[in-house]
Image 1: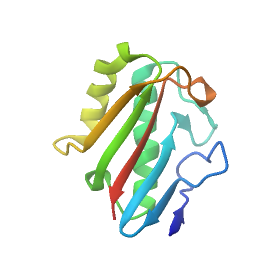
Image 2: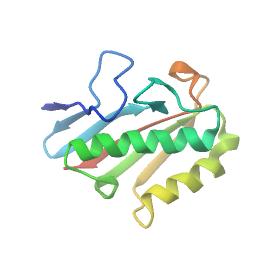
Image 3: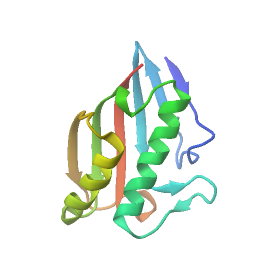
Image 4: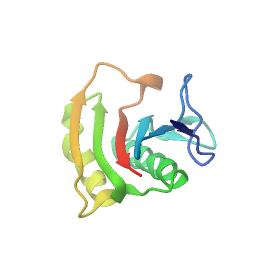
Length: 124
């Protein structure tokens, strides 16, 4: 196993690595909509939060030698399922024609009171 840390993604808010490579697969920890420079949530807007999560994910994937096209499955944690359509539009902008498997789960609360968190599994 090989832990991955990206200096272009925000530092972890807990005792974990950005991603873990194991047997040709990459397991990304949940990414919050944190700006790496400020370590604060980017905005209260769900669309901007979704974009920031995906930017942070892209940085970590790049650090591991992967891209969004390497993604096998994503899991999205949302505080409000009423935002499902909005996050889908942003998600589609980033992933384009690549459609990995996905789950979307409504949760009561997320770290730093974020509205969204995204984790994923990718192929190396």
